[in-house]
Length: 295
Ligand SMILES: [Mn+2]
Image (cartoon, rainbow, N blue to C red; front, side, top):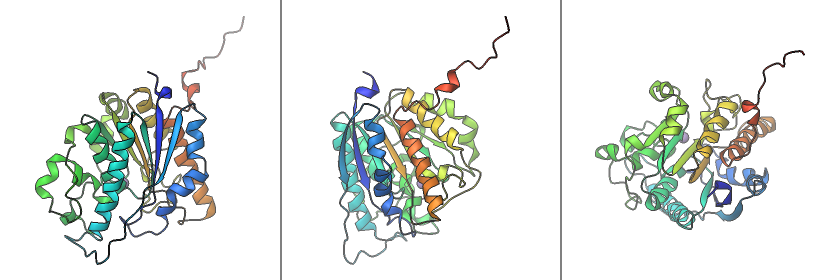
């Protein structure tokens, strides 16, 4: 079955509690307004928009192990996990519009619950693998993978609100792309990483994997990142495996920077969403540019 015959469930996660910058909760709204749903409908998919997940506000939610609002965040991610399980369980591809990258906890847990062999491709300037006790900031958007990766569990405290998360992901089933100061993954090259993932694939794309010049409106921009072309190439390669199962786009913050910065960042995010679902913007790569010989 062609991927285009699949249906897509769109889920908004207006979530900002994993980091200190206000405005990232507006990510789903700004991406929808820019046409995130329309762009995939125009590709011919049957799209169902599940709306935004309902977020909790648990009173007296005191910090634990340096993590702020653990019970609230745990409840929010649990709801996202259940929604992603429902979408994938119905046979659809799930498109998650964040929100800060904490959403990886709910997205990947829910995905792996239905497809235990799914591989994760973490596309990010940061590894987001800090266990709570080794995080200097206590911002949980730098920790999502620590909840999910089996090999890290000896370092994980029992955080209130997170007893439902199961570390279902083996370290060998995750690939990192775009991380600036860990160069092993970059040395692997994107070909190998993407083609190695044979089952369901879950690209979790933090917009800050891109160079800060093309995603200025994000909480922790880093220079020296992927070009837009490289970012699109990665998600196109994943699309062409035919195994795209869940796609996360995170950390677009329309409250940061000038209106032009926001427009540049949203444009980058939209380009990635389109490419991830098969919008053929790079067909020219396969065109023959050799110069015809004169007769
Ligand atoms: Mn991230």
